[in-house]
Amino acid sequence: DAGVIQSPRHEVTEMGQEVTLRCKPISGHDYLFWYRQTMMRGLELLIYFNNNVPIDDSGMPEDRFSAKMPNASFSTLKIQPSEPRDSAVYFCASSFGLMNTEAFFGQGTRLTVV
Amino acid sequence: AQSVTQLDSQVPVFEEAPVELRCNYSSSVSVYLFWYVQYPNQGLQLLLKYLSGSTLVKGINGFEAEFNKSQTSFHLRKPSVHISDTAEYFCAVSEPSTLTFGKGTMLLVSP
Image 1: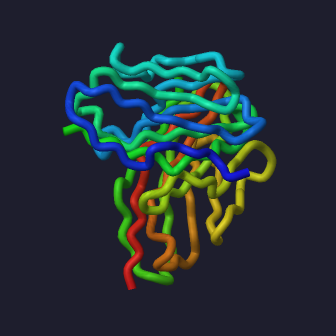
Image 2: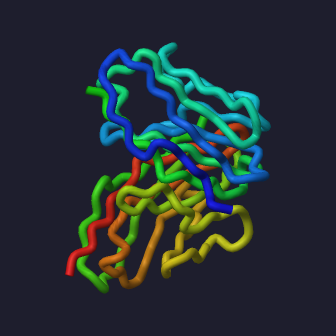
């Protein structure tokens, strides 16, 4: 397996534009996580899915953020409209099980909103 | 809800010196503990994990960590670091329904 695949690796957009980040988890994994990493706040969990169903979205900062997982092999994180404070590295991770297993991370999408 | 505290945001050391990166957590239930490493411009990779059994856990690249239940700590150690160990290290705690990361410790190894 190629691991968790995220696209794009880098995204630069203007304030107010819609941004869509994509993630392909490892085949067979039943959990998928979206994290945001910034210098100020470190690594924050935004939302996670189990078997394509959103379980906890309490970390989603506001209504401008939405995430979907239409099937076991694909998830999106959308920001609409984007703002400069959304600039961060967004990571997707997947795992088989939740508590005692390793989470495998993608290489991240570096988002810059100007 | 649990929290994870990594007291040091940055730890500078010289090559071949020993290092300890500190991690404390708070939780009201039994937890599983992890250390992840993040090299520049990459995602996180698992270094080691404590699930049960021996409190001393050995991981990749010569790292080890010790689980101390009474002190609610899970400090990461390496007896002799290399330049290539320069990276950010994250402690993480897993309990039912969530996985929480600390804010990370940047290990800077210089010659």
